[in-house]
Image 1 (cartoon, one colour):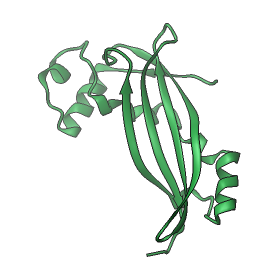
Image 2 (image 1 turned 180 degrees about the vertical axis):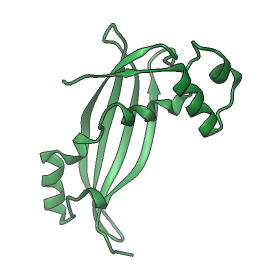
Image 3 (image 1 turned 135 degrees about the horizontal axis):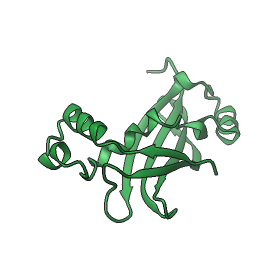
Amino acid sequence: MHMVKFPIEWGKVREYATATGAGRPAYLDNPASVIPPTFLATVVYWKAIGNTVRSAEVAEACATAGVPFDITSLLSLEQEYVFHGPPPRAGDTLLTSERLHDVRIKHGRNGPMVIVRFVVSFCGDDDKVRAECWYTSAYVQKGKS
């Protein structure tokens, strides 16, 4: 499994807290602050996440459902953050990895869609998972209303 370093810089925590309206003094004034829970979404600036939504398994499901296997047909449906213990802090460096959880075909009123669920894990130096970000996305038919 390929791991990518994800440094948590206090300046970036402050910028993120300010930009998202999470103005707790702890985020803004403490160089060892815990992160706002959704800060983990910024991992996209360190790691090109989403390789799992372009996997052979997902391509096969799209072909079976008759849904375009095209990134422009991909919708982000949900993100869920799970913390295993205390939240990470500014100054920590986490290691990230991504894995496919499941792929399923669902038939809705506008036609078939391929639901993809994947997880980005954030580990500490001890290789223990500290947090996870669960993503749910869907490939859909374009032009249906």
